[in-house]
Length: 235
Ligand SMILES: [Zn+2]
Image (cartoon, rainbow, N blue to C red; front, top):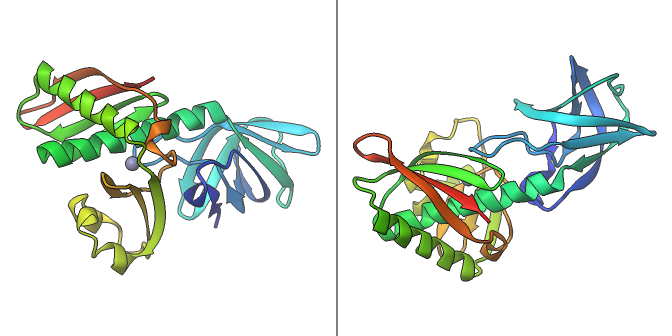
């Protein structure tokens, strides 16, 4: 299995690891800071180097407990010590965007009682669907103001890894459908924007909402009778 360094340190941009398996055009490592994608957050990109050779990491995926790094050219052999470097600009933009999405989620639930039904993001751009009956221009501007007030409030973002039973007793997590987690998962990673939002989440986030920057609602549309979509840009 691969130790998931990004789960406990989102700010780790470089790391040392050992190749544990090679398959097709991908290598597995014993530990990695590369996020393999999931929960709406895209995978990281970057490079692996060893003894003067460099491999560009074009894609990362997780299969079971193992993270696979897709590279080009002659693959390093099993047992090779490699140094991994993330495309930090892309990753940090994704951290800011992911936290922006959780701020949006928290504000919409706290102020309007609406739950999220889906979402997706790319660097500095995200969309989220909510169970919302009506969405008007004035309401969108109000949401935008409230979201940016949470950025300005400089709230800390805390990550914890809890035993399943403990996580299942937290009311905020029950609301976000934690009961849908597969049976086999014994530890639950939670991301809390202190005083605003708490979710079971595997993604990488900034440590404080002030790092997000300005959030602008760039579009909104109806996706059915009770589903409304909000699209934001992080600036
Ligand atoms: Zn998330």
